Every structure is written in structure tokens, then in C-alpha cells.
Length: 117
Image 1 (cartoon, rainbow, N blue to C red):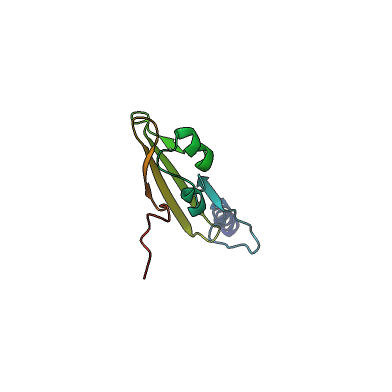
Image 2: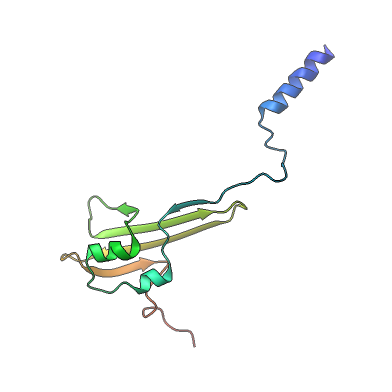
């Protein structure tokens, strides 16, 4: 009876996937999703640029609204192996002539950022 009980306990511990045991040296990868957009890329954008020019600078947008073709969303999400999460977002708006009108989000052109005194 003790052997059966010991086997059942051992089997249940193995079936849990050893999630409570931390193995040293196990490599976890960083998970990156979306478009990497940085301040240098945003500084290259100018009002009046066409959609193809914006696509050349920033890449293909992650989200293009089906009902509003004048809005492009660039999202970036990164989770490191230590569990630290980074999220960034930039939204580009175009006018009726399909030219860059304005942008919002985590990055703005340096000319639009008020300088600290």
C-alpha cells in the first residue's frame, strides 16, 4: 500500500511539470512583437509626406484600420527573460490627400517636444 501511495505521489509531482523547481542554466528568450520604432525614425518624418514615404521610414504598420485608412498604428511589445515588459505605441494620421498630417504616441518629433530649462 505504501509503495502504491509513494508511486502516486511521485507520478503527480512529475505530472505538474516541475514548475515549482527552478533549474539553473535554463535559457529563456526575449519575446518581441510589433514594429521597432525609435526617436531617430520619428525625426525623419515631416508633415506632407506620402504614405509610401512614411512606410519607407517606419516600415509596414502593424495595424491599419479597415474603416479608417487614414490612421496607421505602430505597436511594439517586448518581454525580457527576467519578466520586464516594455510597450511603445505610435499612431500616424493622414489627411484626405493621403499626406502625413500628425502623429501621437510615445515618440514625437524632437521639434515638437518642449525643451526642459
